[in-house]
Image (cartoon, rainbow, N blue to C red; front, top):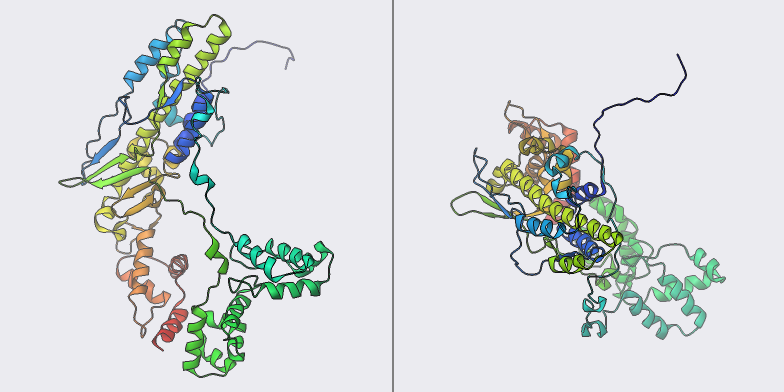
Length: 514
């Protein structure tokens, strides 16, 4: 074999992940709220972009699709291209782009999108930085709000420090109390050890223990406890109900969790009526006293897709336009700045921003159409669920949707990530409708795992105290209904539903009857 240098010509095909294509793939898996935050960052960096306010006359993607049900796939509304926006942008670009230059709008985006569905999540937030907003002042978005000067809700730390400043006179004790407050978790339990606090503050463990004893008498009752039993004991002590029998019950909470009433009767030395009263007192206590000071505002789940029944049958699927951001190219600003550019650096900069803006507009349009197509196909596949209930949820995998609409499987995975659909039966994540299948015992179509879990839950809720169903009995009932399922699968589904075993349920029902 001769060792020498030579030149070879090879013709190969390869797919290059440009920053614009990486951006388009990333947009697909964002929810509407995440997309809004992303667009806000892009508007800050690109002077040609602006958010469309109000209804506007700008063209929008296909906003709704109709599904009539049955075997027919239904007629989807047309998917118009943003022609008005494209024409305006290309007209403005004609003064900047050299003749014959390719624009991102000329890319065969549909094919590239489907072929690149298998790509992993990629980065690339933006193509360039820009420090302004087309002459707008940053102060225009930050108006003074009088509500910001109002007093805030009292936190747990504020509540405890106010009591410590009154009850503890010694500055050293106050410092120990502040260190102990730092060790409280969100439920009000003390984490860490007293020895660690003593070593940190260079004082005796006995003094830390004495301060803790005083802190455990503060409000709310049960605060600074080191275990559930101690938390309940502190509250019972506040009510003057911590007698030896109650203390014995607190020392054996594991037996109470197991519904082992004979063992508790023997340990506490009381009769069944007294034990029932003691258990009732414990149930009235607060196992997490610090949660009363949790003023965090619960975030409302905002759906990305809205589904509603159609008059005469079928369903209407549309995007939630209240949360779907719309972006336009600021043609007025583009025309003004393009006419005054005299050097190549400025023209290249504006050219790059125009390309980036055009690609973002088309990516948003493509994202909306893709989500709508996937959601429409899911509704078609799970039509029985929406019409009759969860027991009719059919097995479904990503490949079924991908083959039906002609997209890559990983593209469907991105579309169904962090996307929620509001339906007449509630708000569901799109991934909820993809469930594994369980074979049928009589040769009928397979059953959805979610439908089987719902069936198990209904059987257990309908059982009587005299005949509690075991896992083996549940298997027999399900097999009579044509569901071929193993006992360990029933146990797994029952535990996932947080339903105790038949022994625990029997003890629980016995306690309720007493």
